Image 1 (cartoon, rainbow over the protein chains, first blue to last red):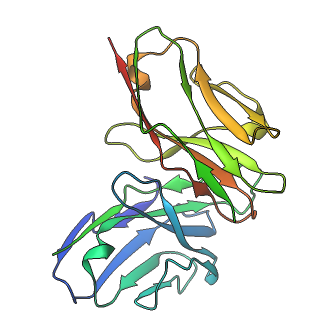
Image 2 (cartoon, each protein chain N blue to C red):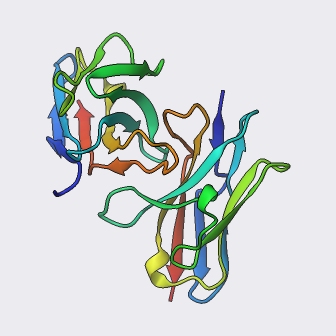
Length: 115
Length: 108
């Protein structure tokens, strides 16, 4: 197991285009998180899943953003009609549901640049 | 709402000197605090958690509920400690809220 995998690692797109990112979590983890990180800032929570259920969404997640985890395994994050403000690193993380550990396992991230 | 503040964007110290990274949080309940670290060209990873009261790579952190702080300390910094450090809070039991991060640069 190579850990959490994210694709693509980099994406450059023009404003108004749609983009989709994929995250493959560690196989035995049933929680999956999406975070966004802009330059000079810490990761900001976007949403999380437990198995296939999306249990919480941040107010940062506008209507243009949608995340899915259809079979409780991999997840996709789609951004429609991208704007320059969407340029950021999108991080995926997975974990066991046992919060006594509090440990998230992060992927390397998908960097989005909107021109 | 919960919030984590790391007032220093950059800490530059010489090898062998002590280093302390400040972290303050706002949350009215009983928080769980963590430090995450990101070394150059590596993933963000857990460094330590307050509940374990452990020392990892020589780092320790004490939760001070009176001052709502969770500062990270190491008595003798090493060059390999150069990295980005993020303080994080688990307040709702479901997700982590991160601070803005502190870059540590240990000079030889």
